[in-house]
Length: 122
Image (tube, rainbow, N blue to C red; front, side):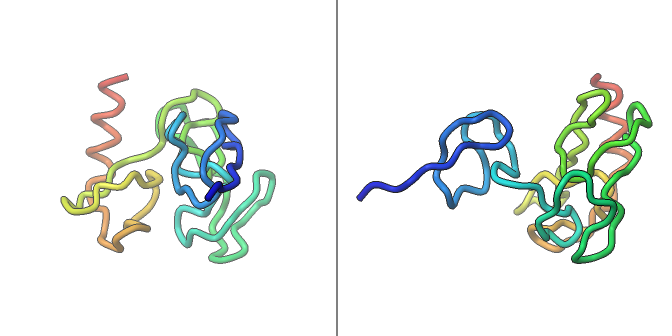
C-alpha cells in the first residue's frame, strides 16, 4: 500500500509524513519547528512559545548573534547549537540551553563542557 510523502522544509526531500527526522539532511524538525523546552509547535517570527512562554530568540554561544531556538544551527554563523543528552541510553540531540532532555527527561549537566569542546573543534 502506497503512502503519501511530504517534502522536508529544509532540503525539499520527500519523506514519510510520520517521520521525526529527514533521511536526506538529518533535520530533527522536517515539517515544522518545535520548542526545545515543551516540544509545542512554534513559528519563526513569534516572540515567545505559546506552550511554556520561553523566549524564541537567544544569543548564539559561538558568535553571540541572535538565533531562533527552533533551528539546529545559528542563524548568523551557521554553527550547530545542538548538544547530546548525557544519558547513555538516549544520546539524542538537544538545544544547547535545555536543562533536561526532551526525549528521556534526564537532566543535562555538562552543557558548558560540550560547548567548549565544540568551540575547540571549530
